[in-house]
Amino acid sequence: MTPSKSLETYPYNKYHSMEEINQWMKQISAKYTDLVTQHFLGMTYEMRPIYYLKISQLADNPKKIVWMDCGIHAREWVSPAFCQWFVREILQDKSRIRRFLKNLDFYVLPVLNVDGYIYSWTTDRLWRKSRSSHNNGTCFGTDLNRNFNASWCSIGASKNCPSSTFCGTGPVSEPETKAVSNLIESKKEDILCFLTIHSYGQLILIPYGYTSNKSNNYEELIQVGQKAANTLKTKYGTNYKVGPSVDILHATSGSSRDWAQDIGIPFSYTFELRDEGSYGYFLPEAQIQITCEEATEAVLSILDGVCKKFRCSANSSGKVTSTSVVLSLLMSLRSFI
Ligand code: ZN
Ligand code: ZN
Picture: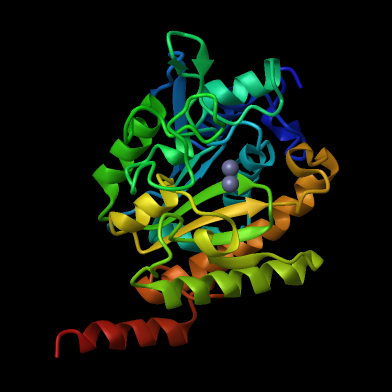
């Protein structure tokens, strides 16, 4: 697609270049002015802007935040496709996500690793890292998902630049991770859920990657995650495994998921989308739609779990019934007694 085409015909079942995704962000915030605003997050190593979308319904009540980032690993192309899909889902008429907007704002970052994503389009389809320069300009790229300040570079990461899991020169040494960390840190009291989208493997990962110790809310994370995997399966029968990264994938330090857990965000998950390796990073465009549809079910299920705990949705059907109004009145009365 050329960047001048309209939003109405934007193909969500195709992979898009960074230029197209930037154009899409501009168009979507211009069309849904009452709901969507585009924000500058920071600059990449190669001095490109990183943008995220804030989806927020105008209201007087204070709201909590759901964070979703995609494209931290360049070659995982279905990830940015999912972020775009998910944004469209929120904005659709009669969307099942709209019910959450009364009490939740969505922050969606379609491509975190902008430099790497572009490089995977122009030069090396299997590029994973950022494009920062090391070893006197002879080696490039930090694995941004090993660069967060969570037991940095202690395990499952490398201090050598040529490695695909190079952790950088220090915790949060990269401008991209710095930009994300700063925003999340500044909003952390309000963020209920941190979702970071990868491929592939069909996994819903919970903390931790850097230790086999269980997080303090392990049972709850597993329960909500397992429910999400079950819901996902009802769509097309796809199996997703749920568990800590260290147990069901591999040990990793410096991941954003573990960092989000450590700074106190209650629900932190990594999604590894389709498939299990038949196509891997080369997942055909024909599978984008089903991948996104089933993963959307899982995200909605997680949000149900989050909102059950923090009472952030009207009710599960999206309609505010008279019973639930009476109930919430009783609940609020009770708090005065
Ligand atoms: Zn990844
Ligand atoms: Zn991995």
